Structure formats: structure tokens, C-alpha cells
Image 1 (tube, rainbow, N blue to C red):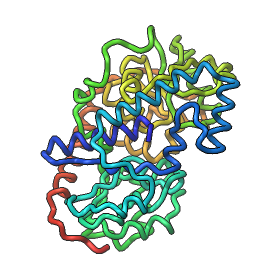
Image 2 (tube, rainbow, N blue to C red; image 1 turned 90 degrees about the vertical axis):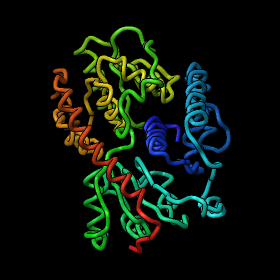
Image 3 (cartoon, rainbow, N blue to C red; image 1 turned 60 degrees about the vertical axis):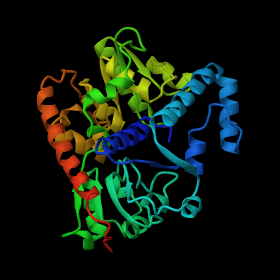
Image 4 (tube, rainbow, N blue to C red; image 1 turned 135 degrees about the horizontal axis):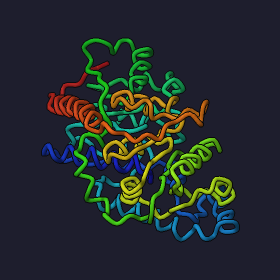
Amino acid sequence: SFNYGSMLQAWALQTYLQSLGHNAIIVNYRSKVQRETYHKPIDFHNIANSLSSCKRLLTFPESIRPLLRKWHLFDDFLCQELHLTAEYHSLCDIRKQDWSSFDLLICGSDQIWNSGAQDSNETYFGNWFPNRKIAYAASFGPRPENVNWKFTAPLLKGFSALGLREERGMEKVLEYRPDLKGNFPMEIVCDPTLLLATSVYDKFISDKPLIKGDYVFFYTAPFVGSEQFAVAAEIGKRLGCQVITDKAYYPNVLKPYGICQYLPTGPREFLNLIRHSKLVTGGSFHLLVFSLLLHKDFLCIDGDKDARTNNLLKITGLENRIVSLNAPHQFTLIPIEKWSVVDKNIAEYSSFSREWLSKEIMQNDSKCDN
């Protein structure tokens, strides 16, 4: 999907596998929901997109050109940086393809098994693949407790190993599939973006800031409540900085909070906005990841409820960077000083994950009927 985390984690896993000498190709599955969700700013392919496009033309026409630029920045990254199969739009399309020449399928990473997502379906479990398959850093989303486990649990059949990204996800798997516990390889592993050294991302980040002066970069999931805008605005006020977001919220939404927009933002520009900011904040897992990698002060809004954020903050020892919406004014702006400790924790986590992944890739093609 045209989402920063989705694009960058796919690129990171591909890049890491290539560094091991493998020919890594991404199954370019783009469901109807994905294509309709990440459409161009003016799109009349269905009723919902047509209504959205008409509203934008009438009430926010100045956003159309930068949003079209954003769409092309994602498309350029997709075409230039990712090694893809042909594009598939359905499980039926994928099943028609002959996959026998591929030795291994890796399902992951990110929220690939979040049944609450609009396009969640059995395609993401790889039961169409004829040879050995494993999962790497697969996630059930921010709240694994809300996953439809009656649908999900049976689809874990056929995997040779499960590398999951969050502990709460592992707990729910073992609750609904206790038969997997024991000899079956299951571990908590890091997101693919953490498999690579920070310097690897430098090629994507210009030394020239996209925003002049000090700013707070605010990025979170769409359709958030006003509480998150209020927290971001208060952070900016305390720091004496403007607050910048990449999302095309309608002006009346942001005006009460004084938040500004920078819309033409693809994966490269996302990293630029993080690196050159004074502080980043929001509710995005990959915003947290790249804040850690790029040594940027951050605050995770509503992070106490998100399994993904909880897991990574616990590993890095930075649980104090959470802003709970139950107490939105209780946060500290004291800079993170012990980056060496954070780096050490991430290095240990990624080293373990690299060893686990390499071991599972090198296993023979025998299948585990679980």
C-alpha cells in the first residue's frame, strides 16, 4: 500500500535478504480495497471515491496538486526500489500463477494479519504457495485481542516457523493454537527496518530539510480524534515550534490547533521530515522505529494501548516516552540522552532476529504439517 511503513519495511526485508545473497522478489498483491484506499486525489472509479473527490474539488482544491505529487512519490519508490512480481488483485489471480520455482515464501511483515483491516483475507497467509513458508515479523495490529481468531487461527496451518513482531500477538496465537507450542519454531523478532544499519537509509535522506526552521513532525493513522491534535499542538507550544503533518486533513480540522501541512511526502520525504525535526510525535509504529534509528526525540501518543509500540518501547527501555490520552498533559520533553543504551538494545534485538531468520531460511524444504 502507499503507506510509509508498508513501503519501507518491504524494502528493508528485500534489501536484507539480498545482502545474504538471495534473490528476493515481493509478491505484488494489491487488493481492490488497497487500490481504492490509496487512490489519486481525484478519482471517479467508485461512488465513495467520487464523493471524496467532489468534496475535495469544492472545499480544498489547493490540496490536489501536492496530493498528486505525493501519489507519484510513492509510485516512484515502488517502481524504482522494490523488486516485484506482476500485480495481483485477488486470491484467484495469485492461485493461477505457477509458484513452484520459488524455494521459500516469507509472509510479513507489518500488520499483515490484522483481521480488523478492511482488506484482511486468507491471501496473506500464503496457503496458495506450494513450497515451504515461514512468517517474519508478522503483526496482528495494535490490538491483537480484537483479531477474529476463529478466522485467523486455522490459517496458521502449514507454516514451518512463525516469527511474530509483538508479544501480545504471540500470547493470542498460543491461546488459540496451543498445539503450536513446543518444537515448532516461534519467536518474537524485530521489524525488518531494524535489520539494517541506520547508514543504509542515508541514501534516501537529503541533507536539505524540507521544512525551514525548528518544527515538530506529527504523523499518525488517519481518522484520529481531536485529542491527538491537541497533544501535538501542546508539544509544539511547549517547544516554541510549528507543528507539521503530512496528511491532507481539511483546513477546518487543523485550524483550531495551528497545525500546518506538508503534503508532497513519499517514503524518502517521510525520513527527511523525521531526521530534520526537533521532535516527532504521533501514533505510528514506524514513526517510532525511524525516530529510534535516526536518534530523534519522540513522544508516542496513545502508545499505552498499542501492542506494537509497547513491545518496542519495552525492548529499548523508553516506556516513559508514552503520552496516554487518559492523561494527555502528563508528558516530559526532557531529551533522550542515553542513545548508546538504546542502540545496544536494538543491536541485540536485531542480531537475534537476523540469526533466527537466517537459520529458518537455510532449513530444508520439508514442510511441517501443523
